[in-house]
Length: 264
Image 1: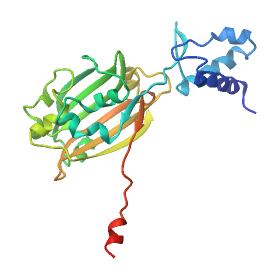
Image 2: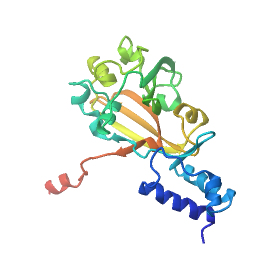
Image 3: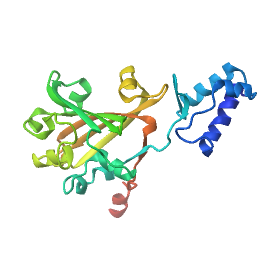
Image 4: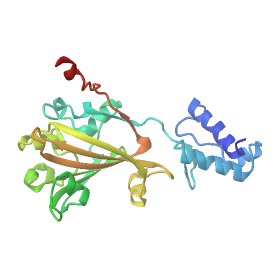
């Protein structure tokens, strides 16, 4: 038999999912549920902590326990990198996500810093650089309104980006079409990518930067961008608040046996 706090948490979770408790609505005060016979103060407190750990509510001093919005941004897959968006238009990848989610982008929702640093080991490996090589790091914090959604730091070889807008610290996208358009104009047309995703516990610095509620994990993205001849022109590391994104990938199913059958 489940403990009383778990039973209460499950009942409250069902009310949240059914819409009885709407996003942004405050749950009853602990004392209210105690007086209603839902359990002791410790039982209700444990149930609320469980709901918070499951990402259904947030708790803060002075504001009580509030139902979290459950409308994450749709982070679309390969379509977000469609060349027609950045080569022939004005759209950059993270704005494509917002368009897919029915939202827009306002000035000030991306901040950034540019620095020339010694490449961390994972960056040097991605770029096939020897230890102690320098790279440019273009670090961005992206928000939706006042709410941070993710960070993204792109690392470039100096010879690829020196003198371009990618080393310009002006806040916001790197001009029309963003960074991929800058690389294209510099003679480095992107051809294919590899994306790797890792779920993990957030660091204290990430909790503060992304304004994460207690217990929320992050999804770390590693993106390697290649030209047709296999040159790596960008290696990026993103840290995404797990509950603020829904990840979607559409792709053709490979059939590596097709050629073998035709060749018989």
